[in-house]
Amino acid sequence: MNRTSLRLTLMLAATLLATIGCSTKNYVRQQTTPLINKTNELDDLTAKNSRDIKDVDQRAQAGIQDVQTVPPRQTRRRWRRAAKPIRRNCRRMARPSGWTL
Image (cartoon, rainbow, N blue to C red; front, side, top):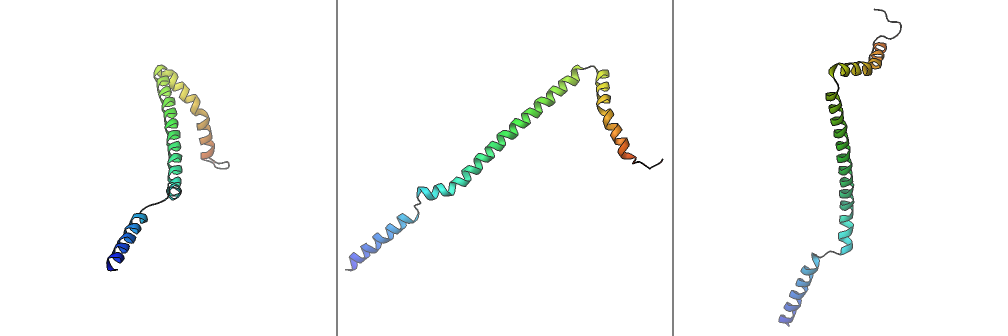
């Protein structure tokens, strides 16, 4: 009787140890689905950022090439024309109506 109970106890212990570490496919799927979704979202965001950076870089390079091909005098004129409305607005904002200098 002693031997059979020892065998039964050892078999029960081995069975418990073998089944404790197991997990079902559904459990693993439930635990990993949020991680997979977040990883995919971050991959999409990274791809979008890479495209945006390449686009900005291309526009910057095109602007640099444009400035390098235009003679300096024409470049200064273009900058002055572009900055003229900005300077007007700055003057108006600097002196509100009613102020005298």
